[in-house]
Length: 463
Image (cartoon, rainbow, N blue to C red):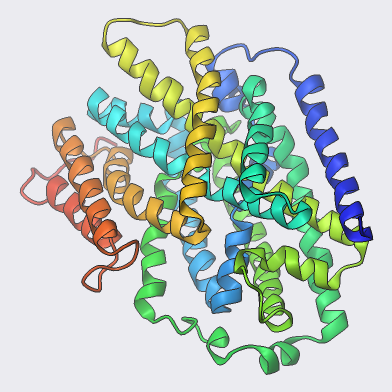
């Protein structure tokens, strides 16, 4: 074994021991109820709220490296700016409303305004949207790079490890690990980027070595390829991780301020990751798999000890998202789908039984995520496909619900079905890309608007 893999292995062992400590020491007892398990007793402070949101929403680290290696600085306009914009809009218009509602999940909001059928339809879509397939794929790629094990081994092992400490601790376990993972994700890139600058030079070095298209705002892809991500980023306004953290915040002001602070951290981290991706393109122009851009760059430029630190930082960044979305997905399946269906059928179940279903739904979530990851094989395509379907289904119904506009539950269910169906068909006909020159998310949003708004009675805000 070379020095670099040895250092990586040692750092990985230390990190795994930390996770084991979380499992065995901090969460020996079960959560006391749904509020404790799902929203951490609504006691998240500003530091905990911010650290958890920052890490949860940035698990696509290898996808960022893949896109930057392929298309350059346009990464910032695709995976940065639109998400800052919509996160800010969420903070301004939705964060306080979400916290004030005292709800536990997004389907609770849909049921409150539109009835149970709409909640079940929305939960079905959320289950697929939040399955952390793209992120467990990244775990597999990272483990493959560090150890040489097959990708599927890393996918399965990383997924099982990520859900292990969530099983009993719920959101409290997720947040406890996120606060350490927050530090690790920044440390890795705060080492990598300065080392690249010191060894090879700054902006002039990048300008001289990058392909011409990498310094263009659109990466040579054209305006529509950039614009579609600004529409996909609307999914931020229906993002269940945002809602869950807001529901769990200790106050309305914590929810709003925490999102703004998180945006600041995302801007800093995007600068670091985009810069690292540009160095990877210059130094590793023949990289066979662009998804490996960041770990390959670290192996190329860092001493063995810091390679280990960087790899653990990458692992922590991805796992912080896998555990969060796996948890949200299991709550959606166990409580918002199975729980609602059994109650609707006249078989009301006790809260502790509901929590048990949620916990075992983690295993079903793991299976769905692993299968989607191995079938797709592309992080970017998974993001694009899930966002292109889920956003048209949920965006308008949730916005109208937040602002109290009256729309019948039946109309909402029809809009969800038609919008999702049109987007899926469009993606299939376009083989995952544009069909007839149009991305699938646009017709889905158009159908949703037509069903909900055109020909319907204008709503009157209730507050």
